[in-house]
Length: 336
Ligand code: SAM
Ligand code: SF4
Image (tube, rainbow, N blue to C red; front, side, top):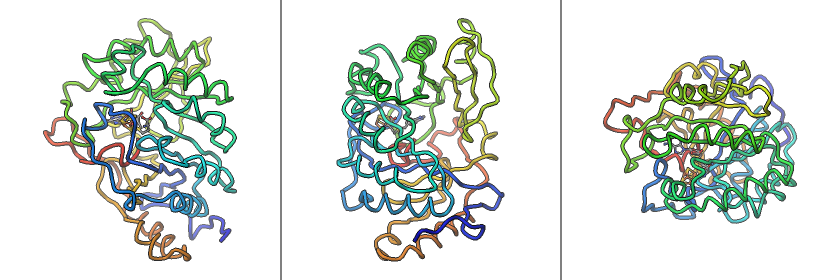
């Protein structure tokens, strides 16, 4: 329809926050089974319950026409979705979109990095929790570290800059690896972010006791590196530090602190077309019926998205002391 965002369509919630960033999960499937993310035996959604790539493209186009400037494609593992490149190409042509970014486990990057760059993907986040092949296998249950390292090289060779590693540290599993991972990031000129483990999904692995706080990681890193606090922000829940003399930024993502909710600029869409207004809350609008019942008319979809702004909650409600996870949704559904 070629509409641009006007005040009447801009996505502004009850608290005056402007939503200009969407994260879209394009599959719940994955070639890994990371212990903090999935169970060992997963039942994945039947194909007809998952957004088609055309539906994904349509959703992104509509959101961009409503003022969204940044799109992150995630999953599950987005690169295991057949024909995913087609979607990246479609998104790459949208006028008004400032950034198309991808979160991946890196296992397929060796094969796709060059094509992703050509399709208009601007930046990539790659998850990497260990540099030890055996540990890597334990954490991902099935992953091959060598393949991921090749993927990281391929991203560099394809010309991606500011590639960021995402690491989840777990007590007694890889909590001693922060310095080695940071050194790897420095050597490869990558950014790196440490994500505190979030209580999502019914994962067979105890929380609370295993969650390594970012303060602890920071202290560990400060024994080896000079870290200079940076005021840079990506509009997300990350605090950044720089290591003088290097290209590397070190980020800390603390979902357990509330202080980022005030600046929250994002919403998430699951691979089933559910629009989640907050990672830690249940408030959701199902966009799938609107997509399927009105294949040629975006108006109902646009109205539902605008209305959804009215239920975006003020903040999340994670509490590690609770026995049950606050939100029983797997990260692979919502996208990280
Ligand atoms: N498969 C891709 C990957 O691993 O990067 C994209 C999807 S994955 C769900 C996105 C991010 O969420 C990953 O960096 C992963 O480490 C993180 N993640 C998954 N479960 C998590 C949890 N329970 N707490 C914190 N981070 C989690
Ligand atoms: Fe797959 Fe990413 Fe979840 Fe690991 S974190 S199981 S790679 S979706």
